[in-house]
Length: 117
Picture 1: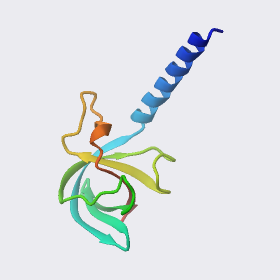
Picture 2 (picture 1 turned 135 degrees about the horizontal axis):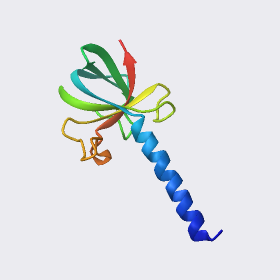
Picture 3 (picture 1 turned 60 degrees about the horizontal axis):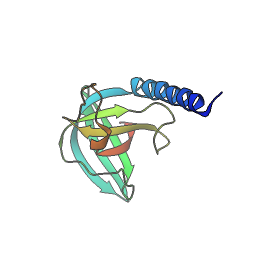
Picture 4 (picture 1 turned 90 degrees about the vertical axis):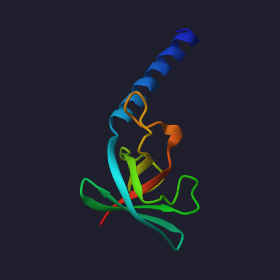
């Protein structure tokens, strides 16, 4: 096989895997009701579908941010994706949806661990 054909097949495979990755994400509207920093851990109290949760991240991490109270979009990442050993989520501004209906990755506000309360 020629190098160009192999490259094209590899590119097609990665494109399919990327599409599958996006399709396994669950998008939700959330409301941040409180935020605090405790011993280097950012803790956000959120409400998703009338149920309370916590989002946590390490304060020094590049993808960790204290968010103001308000409404946001949250993507639950597939198992084994993300930097934490828990259910990883990404948070975006409420208006971050692209034309395809998924949040624009360039507008990600932070990555967190989703914790049931």
